[in-house]
Image 1 (tube, helix red, strand yellow):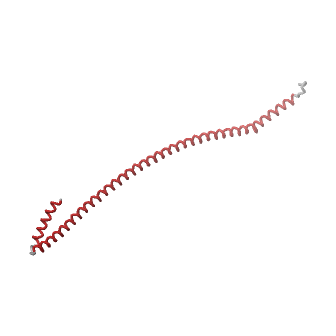
Image 2 (image 1 turned 180 degrees about the vertical axis):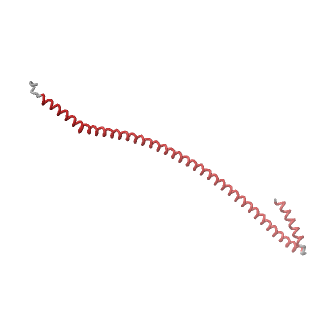
Length: 165
């Protein structure tokens, strides 16, 4: 080693110093840096896993939301159909009730008209009978029994009723 001018003591000392320097670097520099790198790697992987889980959770929530919205739309459609059906039934019932009420009013009016017609006819009949009795009494000049006169006029008018109908 004389040719290269290398002193074996210095060479061993330099190898030893280099080995000590490697041990110091490994303990104080490489291990903490590798630990930080591993921790950062784990943190990034955790963030990626959390992001994937969050994405899956968001997709699940979206699917559930869409399912609920479809259910809500279906219920709304059902309620609208039910309301339309109920409205149609109510409309029909109101129309039927109105028709029945109109028919009842018509029938009552017809009955009232018939009763008023009969009452008016009876009043006219009584008035004519009285006039006929009075006229007959004046013509005959004799005072006949009022009961007899009334019976004769009623029979006469009853005979007219049969002919008029």
